[in-house]
Length: 356
Figure 1: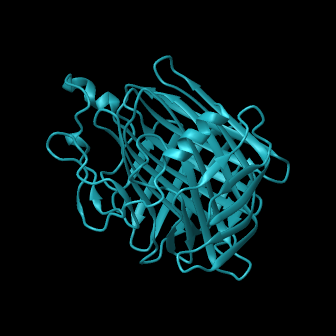
Figure 2 (figure 1 turned 90 degrees about the vertical axis):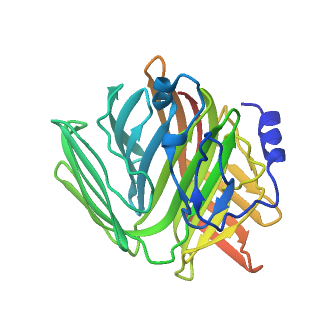
């Protein structure tokens, strides 16, 4: 990806994103989006049965992509588990980053043309599940909390077990986006940052206890129909400010027509602040070089300390992601005009290419 391409994407973004404030279905009877923009809560009913991006109706199911991605940032590392239905295949994958020794490990189960992953219609209720002889995963939603429960028989030669609670206080806001893509394609996404996490992660004989005062979770809940060749950049972080308030960052170069919507937000103590246009600059030949995120309200530098590379090649479905873990430092101005100072906040920034 060239610097000119990054500049072109940055230039296409609207400085005044439209906020969705009224509930409605996501799609009308013809498969067109009824609303586009961003919201603080998931106000739209995700009626994917109305998706209409091909006249060959039996193929439509293969084109719809759905996933639930949970992550936890703790002082010693990062843990993530995902359930995904990509139409062509179901996937379950888990990875663990060790910040202390700078290593990571991940495992994936893929079921071609499978219907083994259960995902809910909407993000605020319903459970997600996958199981086979060796892997059992559940994502549960209850009032005031979300739960990740899982067992993986062979995670690098030892079993992995997780039993985690993500606290989700009433009124905690999200970054919700409805992005149109050419030809009635679309992306409906909800990202929740800075959820305090408690529970245990056991890998073999090593047990990590998550403390809600220092471990913070995020959810990336995605549904949509993309173009076959897709690309995006996502940057995120969850943690604490020096004054003890919770903070979350969500930024990126999204796919599709980004003119009516922005995913660039700051979360402080559960309140979303819409940041509008942000110029993101990085090197795709040396991802370990510092990244910058700048606008009239944002002056951040992201300094990576670890690169995770993940690639999938199922012939029809291909994916390559460079996910950098590092520290954010700088300033962000909230909606009230106050400057929020960020110093050493751990998070990530990634570049993702997909053919799906």
